[in-house]
Image (cartoon, rainbow, N blue to C red; front, side, top):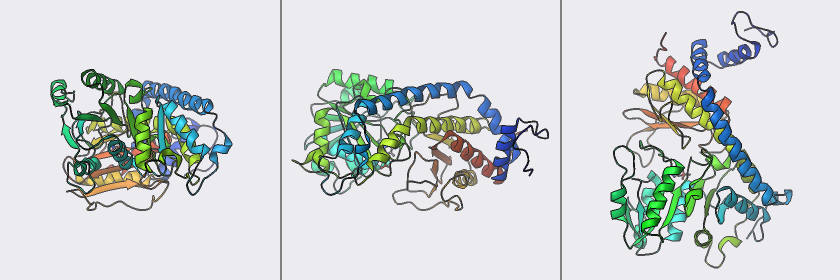
Length: 446
Ligand SMILES: *Cc1c(COP(=O)(O)O)cnc(C)c1O
């Protein structure tokens, strides 16, 4: 490889200087020129889509910035607290900022909320009382919630506390079963849980608009029903959040979208004053509520991560759309497809062969900034019937706003791919996944 080509035109490649240098990096890091070429032609066609994503990110950036200024975020907010954590200015400011960003009366944003499942379990168990019923009008909730609710018998589940559960599945075309939902609402229905992202299911992700229509439908029939949205993977993908369209509570994880890759831990609940009060006393203790909970120095990462989140989500979304178009162009089925509008950052590709699924994950791993030298292997993950393969080389352990991929080793060998702290890195990860597929025997056309 030539070393003296940092200026001027590389005539041999017929590419402008910058592109030639970029190509040189890609090749040096293991991607073949054929894969580079194919991916460049895919990217060329996505300009208009990417411009639209840039506009959404610009609006969300202003939303976050305005909330920080309005709440007078200051350097004093970054000071760590320990012990009880009384009068933690940073924590209080962070929560006020979240409430403004999500357009709610109040928010609870804490490192003591350990993950997304914990945030959702807290939201449910704090609002529901014995004899109440929880309704999911959008089908089966996320796997980990099955034990929270007691769909799968589990110690400490809502079922153990005498809280019943009812579910109305989506219709075959992915739309709401309005009639079924109307019938399912009854005098016991206290709360409705709506999962925005498809998660690891095959149903479509719900748009904020669709969630708004569902909430209106429920509130018209039973106004005292609390509507909670599992907002995981959806934050900042659109210019509105479900809380802008009537949700009483929106809930998510800080090691996904809103943490912007910087939050090292945490979860959030944004909602009405009463809902947040009930959640706070459940998280800590009746009488103490939100007044305790030391921040141990992580508040500044949570704030800086929130500040970056619109931009980070933008990169992850571009990566997802790029991946859909790269693989669709090669004849693979992708969910969502290359043209569909986006409501979360998850992309799945049906890779059809076990060796392609392994290759994809190995490509993502090989492209990572951390642990790039390890090679993922399928393993027997607790709670799953089939072996699962996972790729993650993240700064924050388990973070799925960072470039990551996983999939169960079974037909149709679907990989679920998400994240990427920057579009540039997501792009490279996808190129690398295709490179590994080619090395496993896949042939590019032409
Ligand atoms: C990730 C996720 C959760 C659970 O979050 P964890 O942090 O993994 O516990 C719940 N619901 C959805 C839709 C998710 O994507």
